[in-house]
Length: 311
Image (cartoon, rainbow, N blue to C red):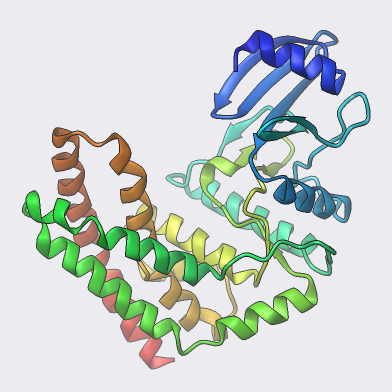
């Protein structure tokens, strides 16, 4: 969509007089109106997901949450097929970087504050999403379909090691009552953000905000901490003690938390994201770096096994 067409659409359907448009990423735009107000407008493919977020935002009041807001003409959403468009405040600040210790701590505290508000929230038309591990297992199946790329480039051993490790920790996770925990979370109205990547945190002078609630889900809070732990680890040199020092979960939850973190879903996720744009040269470089990263995390796997057995 051209900026001119977007401006015309926002004016006719939402009552927004736009003088500036900047594309942030696919279907997400930063706009400034003629009266110098700044917003984010976003196109969503799933209207039911949008309405769930609206219902959630109506029940929370938290300076760390960036919600949807009404368009100037009073509409919650506007439509231009096949998308549903929403409006949010534009937050001026910097995205967090997990390479910085202070940013990691800021992210953790922000998620904890979000969880404190994201309990006791019940939505009539709540979306039913699959359990985290079910989605991760689908990711493993997709990863296995790319075995030939590893073989063709001389990295069969790496491929097998990743798959064996994933299957090993999937099996270990089967002994924990994840489905029961999911049911209890739904009964208590507990919600998770679902995507605690560093780019979904905006740090301002006053606070740090969480943005992008497309993966918002009624689930045990530990699922956000599983993802956060996975994202912290590369910047902690895969040091198990350093990870535990963040005290993301209670001591009794550490075994299941670590066994979940040890599933190399992040390796498979990044690989699948990379492939559509891969050239032969880029593929070889990527696999070389993947092997180096994989070797670096093996000590984490060993220490996790040892700790879980001792608890």
